[in-house]
Length: 251
Ligand code: SF4
Picture 1 (tube, rainbow, N blue to C red):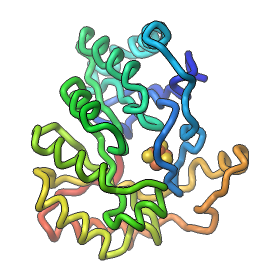
Picture 2 (tube, rainbow, N blue to C red; picture 1 turned 30 degrees about the vertical axis):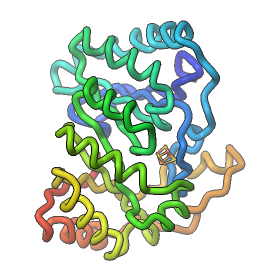
Picture 3 (cartoon, rainbow, N blue to C red; picture 1 turned 90 degrees about the vertical axis):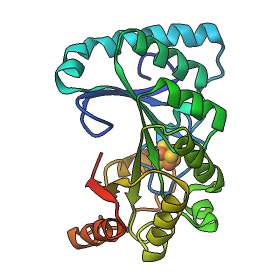
Picture 4 (cartoon, helix red, strand yellow; picture 1 turned 180 degrees about the vertical axis):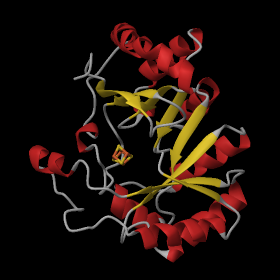
C-alpha cells in the first residue's frame, strides 16, 4: 500500500491525468466493476476508517505530494485524486483537497461519476477540475459492462453542468462495448440536451494491466479484445467533431 491502506498507489510525474506534470493518488475502492478496468486491484473496499485515521493518512500523503511542488509550478500541473473512486472516501478526499488548496496546489478529481451527488458537488467546489467518465448511455448495457446503472452518472453530470463546474469528459473507447455508432449518438444527444460540455477526451483501450487479472484470480473479459485501430479512433473522433465537439486523444 502506498503510505496507508486507503490509497493503493501513488504515481509521480504523471502526464495523463490532467494538465501538466502531476502526482496521481489512486484511492482504494470502486462501486463499479468495468470489464476493461486497468486497476482491478482498486475495486475492493478500503478499510473502515474514522476521522483521526483519515487525518493521519492525509498527513502521510501530503508529504508525498509536496515532494514535486517545483514540477507542478513549472508545468502547470498538480495533484489528481483517482482510483478506484475517490468519492468513496470523502473524508480523506476533502481533507486532501483542503490541504492542497492551502498550499495553492492545483487539484483534479478523476471520478466515474457514480456516487452521492452532494459529495460530488462539494468536491467540485474544492477541486479545480473534474475528470468525468462517460462510457455507455444505454442503462442495460451500462449495467452489463460496469455492474451498475448509468442513471446516477448522467444525473450527476447534469448537476455539475448546472453548477458550471469545470469538467473534462473522458470517453473510454472499448471495442465492442462503447464504440458503436448508437452509443456515440446517444452520448452526443445527452450532452447537447443536458450539459454545457462540448469537449471530449477519447481514451483508446490498451492492454496494460492484463496480468493483474491473473494475479488476482479475476475473470479477464478483455483477453481476446484487441486495441482499437487508428482508423477506428479517427472515426470516433470524426463522429464527435461532426456534432460540434472538440476532441483530444488521451488524458
Ligand atoms: S470506474 Fe475506473 S476504477 Fe472503477 S471499475 Fe471502472 S475503470 Fe475500474
